[in-house]
Image (cartoon, rainbow, N blue to C red; front, top):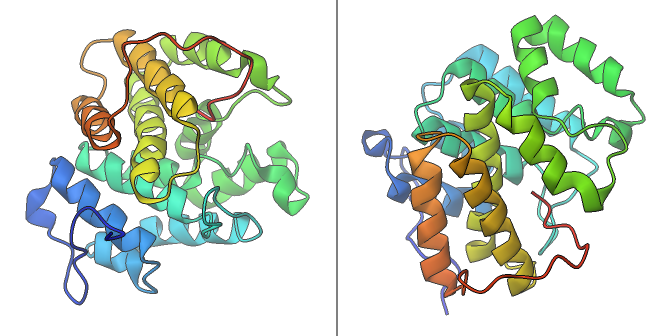
Length: 237
């Protein structure tokens, strides 16, 4: 059984001509999962110095963390989110926020406060980016059993630029399950249901996320028609 559902583009520049397609996402995630040392410039060959600085900021702030599943470097997650934001037509501000979106929420991983990380982002990337990252962060000390409803309420009132990044964040976790399965099937289905509810709040939020969701459901042969009881377990959305 092969590890990747699409052949990775080793040894050559990521195919930027495919912008806006799910095939570009799958190919890019294959590169990320392969843990290429030069992965950032493989995926973002025309990146600005500021975008690279955001990648480095995230790399340092998440250096002590691992992803679920095989225990990959945590940076795989913001890389995947940024890739999907790019393919969804996001701005550079949204790409930077994609790299930084978990840094405030995970401030305690580096014995920092949320305010300290917010202020560091503000100094390096400006107030607009810092506010965008803050808007993408869960409330402090949020009860996991209340997280999904809190997020739906929070993002229903959020501007479109915030919603696009959040939808990319959520669907990236579904894409991860194709490459590195780590959740029970019912947890994946709950995550699909969360994304469905999120996208239903506002038409046209992120058509690419909806398409990726459908491809994940097909690849994993998920039964999403059957309701999943809310047993209090988090779906890690």
